[in-house]
Image 1: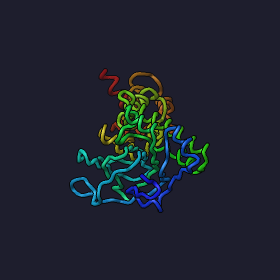
Image 2: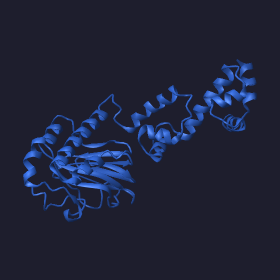
Image 3: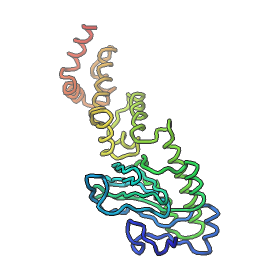
Image 4: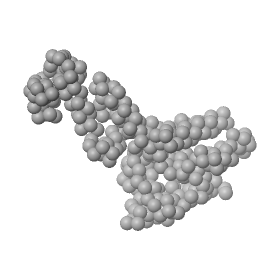
Length: 295
């Protein structure tokens, strides 16, 4: 296929960031096994309303290359025509589409923004045959992991394109490792690691922003994940952890209330009293008297 004249289903080539391969570079790049065709840097993909069957009102498409994208903003959908299945995804999600795969993807919201890179070559084909490249959605986090590849492609020199090839292979292998069973391949499975970390570092005053950063996802995605998996917001979960530690200190130690407030990162003792009463319904002192007596 002549990649210099084809349309890729996103927009016409004249409007794309085309990654030309000078003839003098082609042989050297083929030895690396990777050729680049198109890239999208912080690109706002058009909003595509979908109908009740899950398909869009536009036709499905097949790419003549592999396409790796990372959603930087908004919410999207991915339609697998072979299985007539639609999946929805959000910021921090990655998607890999192999050549010839009939599909459609786009934004469910108008703020759908992606980084993506399209590539082909014998090394990519061999990785696909060996299961190192797998079609579908997976967690990539909010760090722009495709951007270093794009920056190298933009330099358009042979050393830079060779660097881009190496960076791409490195990223693909890392993503495959993250998707393997037992290696927490999805954001949902990463949550269990976070909860373990929270329990192991109870002395640390975690914030919602820190939790999102630990998972490398947005705070909005973190909220959706907690509501889906734990039935509560991240803030509510942190409140419950804080209250559990407070009650353990009240009933399991003889520490003064002011010291307990300090251990719970409450510089103002009155804030400790107010927060404890709000979460438990009674004051710290009364809680200590009541439950020590019952014990």
